[in-house]
Image (cartoon, rainbow, N blue to C red; front, side, top):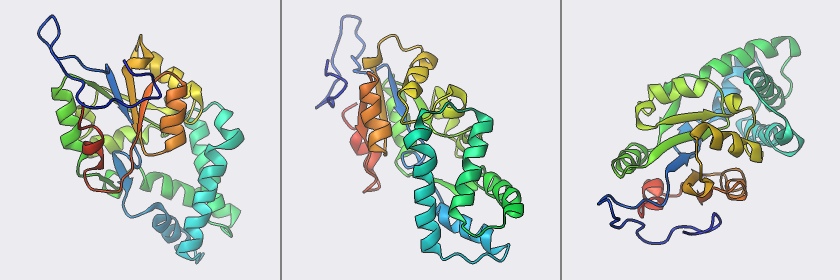
Length: 242
């Protein structure tokens, strides 16, 4: 068995005494945004449109830059050490909206935030990557248990349902329910408990964020693989040996 810091090379399947095939993992866990799905159009476009409805004309490139900075500020650093829940996630995203739309009048923040919160809860504003459904279906046929583990809130279940992915996984693990968000190692501790995984080395994490999805997952005893979405079949290629 490879250590959690090593990938699995070649085919891991082979006959065992009971006639079934040997699997290197009991669980394969996927990040959501950037791994299974992506906002469509990009978030900065929605943020810019929300500002323009109030007469705030922030250039798209500035919104992109502000949004990236705000995401890092409110998810990483000292914020990564803070516990989370549904109320905290709403407050976190309200701060991100404030920082992304500089110049937004404070008395309009609540309205804009509510608009954007609901906007990103609508499945039609997300696109599932083309290789996701075939990959999940293949892995389930191979006997793997599948889960989604994401920095998100209850909206994720609505989105996955709308994209017809809910029935393709066995568990949906959300930071607002687990009490911690990635890259905090306690996210993986809580996820391990929720999966009832007795052996952490039998859990594989797949995600597009190297530190939160790969480095910290391995430090927590899981295996992990880094997904780079540089081709249409990136996920199916990454999991082809499973």
